[in-house]
Structure formats: structure tokens, C-alpha cells
Image 1 (cartoon, rainbow, N blue to C red):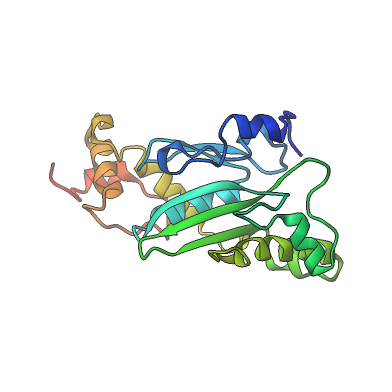
Image 2: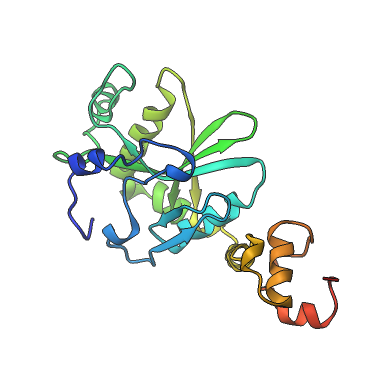
Length: 229
């Protein structure tokens, strides 16, 4: 549920989800969302734009996948249009075709969590959930109906986009935290000492270290002479 009630009309006027790259504005911003998890706003180290994550799981997912150089860009909180047009089949029409209750309530549009642009030209949409059990438990039939509408929304378009599920339980939070720590110094102009310079070297992949097993202690690494400035 939104903490601040901003109408879909206002979001359209603001140009949310209408541009790409550094100009991307998500349909839902972190401060507009009430969540049991921790919302966060990241700074994308490659474009400089704000990235709005609605949970710690989404934050980890974004950081890990943005670290992958085969991924050109990621959009978060991507709107699914309720009504059909010449360009897209809306979620209401899709629900009717599937024989399930519509995904949107009233005038509210829904969203997909992430849209990923790969270097090979392919595009993928990812729906992020807590766990497989949270989706496939017997009592979650309505959730699965909603997900079937979301999946069809992307796969039934004139230019189909692949759709998949990913889960909080599969994220490496150590890797995510290390990526967050070093990429704060991706821009060399932010370097101010030996430790921040080491983080810059790791962030720009001039030095390769184990990011997945434990939180990096860059101060100790500098003392141990892991690099020569």
C-alpha cells in the first residue's frame, strides 16, 4: 500500500516509466510505499540516477545484477497498463482471457519489480518474491492468478518479453553489501585515501577479489599491500 496516495494520473503527468537509462523514473518510489521490509534508495554507479527498492531483498537483487557487465540496464517498479491500447494488451483484457479476476483495483495500475536489458539485445522481466513457498503454497492461489496475468502481460505483447520469478531466499547479501560498499567509489573523483582507492579499483574491476564469502575489510587489505597506488 502506498504511504503517500499519488494518483495514476499524476504519475503519468510526471513521466514515470516513460523514459529509459539515467532518465528512468519508477512507477512507485520508495517513500511512497509502506513495507514490512526496509525500503532504500540506491545511487546507480553507472548512470548516477536514484534506484527505488521496496525491500532489502530487492536492494540485494538490484546490486548483484547491476554488477554483471552483461546487463546494460535495469528498470525497477515498471508499470503494467490496466487498459488495452494499440501498443499493449492491458491487464484487464488479459484477466478476462485467462478467466480470472482482474489484477487492478479501481484506477490503480500494478507493477513488475524489474526489467532487465541484456547486452545481447534480449529483455527480461523479473518478479521478486520472498520464497518459492510464498508463491506455491496451497493458500496462495489468488497470488498465482495475479502472477499469471503479469506473466501474460509481457509474453503476449507484439514484442514478447520473457518473464521469470526470483526470490529473497536465493540472494547473496554478503555480495550485495560488498558491491554497495565498493561502488560508492566507482567515480575516481570520490577517492580520498588508500582505502577508498582500493574500493575504486575493485568497483572498476581493475582488481578482482572474493566478494561472496565475507564482508571485505579494505583497511586490512591496504595494510597487507594488496595493491600499489
